[in-house]
Length: 127
Image (cartoon, rainbow, N blue to C red; front, side, top):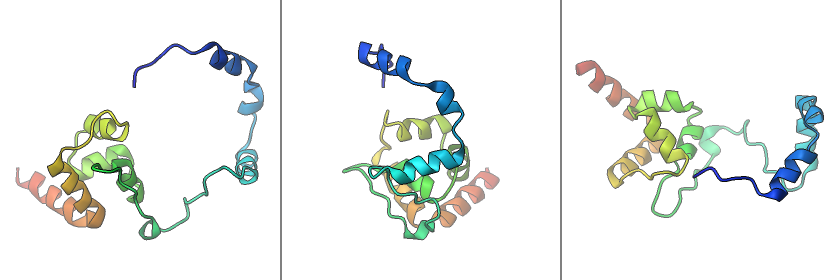
């Protein structure tokens, strides 16, 4: 995604924002606003990973979804499964989609991450 200049409407919205009030908000204030907002997505942070289902785009793979299900940072995911961090970021930000073979590997990681991590570790130690 390329950066673009802000529209006049966007500039006006930013200028009208009370940033001091936003900076002063506590976590409790934020949680209360989220709870009061009927359009807010539910908080799934306490749901066990095995109960979450990843929705993959048609013909693609949700790398961010798999990583989130495993509760790993981008760096941890990249290191654990042998991906370059920049490539992982490109996938997650939609700049590129993994090729078909990598998509298959990612689906295996989704299904059995410990097996793939073990194979990656064994391979890197043998090299």
